[in-house]
Amino acid sequence: MPSAETLETDTGTDAIIALDAVSKSFDGARTFAVRAANLEIGRGSFVAIVGASGSGKTTLLKLVNRLIEADAGTVRLYGRPVGEGPGHILRRRIGYVFQDVGLFPHMTVADNIGVTPKLLGWPRAEIAARVAELLALVDLPPDSGVRSPAALSGGQRQRVGIARALAARPDLMLMDEPFGALDPVLREALGREYRRIHDDLGLTTLMVTHDVVEAVLLADRILVLRAGRIVADGPPHALLTGAEDAEVRALMDMPRRQAARVDALIDGTTSDE
Image (cartoon, rainbow, N blue to C red; front, side, top):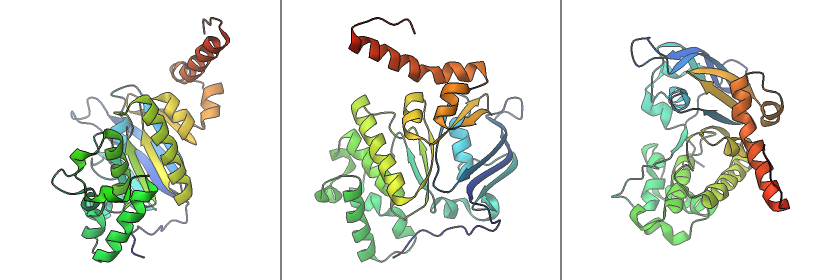
């Protein structure tokens, strides 16, 4: 069946994403949104990026799919520099989900989902089959395809955004606060559903989130950014129990403190943690 064009790995490495001394400044190098970032993300990983507002999370994400161009260093996908070809062709190979979804209001849900396959020249019947498959995958009714985005709830629109990102069968998904605008119950449910999709399809996911609890519960690995630098990188357990940096420890201690307070409320006791 048709799939998105992929970049063939030419280095023998299993890393899908690699950053080598990558920097980006928006004010002529007086301050850096991303500074000297070195990073490798292997196939099948689920990596969350956390940090304070302005720490460089979204900039780092957009450097990967060339929505932002690096000032220095090299970004590679599948072993090849992302600058080798046109940016729009690169982005057709990558799933991208963001908080505001950005569905085309003048198009039906089905047409929104089928945008990238259509650009890639898929036959109409194949696009229709893929749309039906994805509506089921993200748990939307089959008749959702004929509706307009305005007729959907916020959670349904976010599901459509995920389906659209998956339409051309990318194996790499970039997600920028994908569930941030949703209420807490729906946010948690969609997060779990996306994690299931990630595992079932064997995806590689790089997700920006301001919610440390979400990062801990969904990701296999967490990057902590501060002032454009990666100051911590490891699995949730390691960062929860042994982060060396004091600010990282304070950030990662938040889920434990929240859990302790909830346990205390359940037990009918108080907790100062």
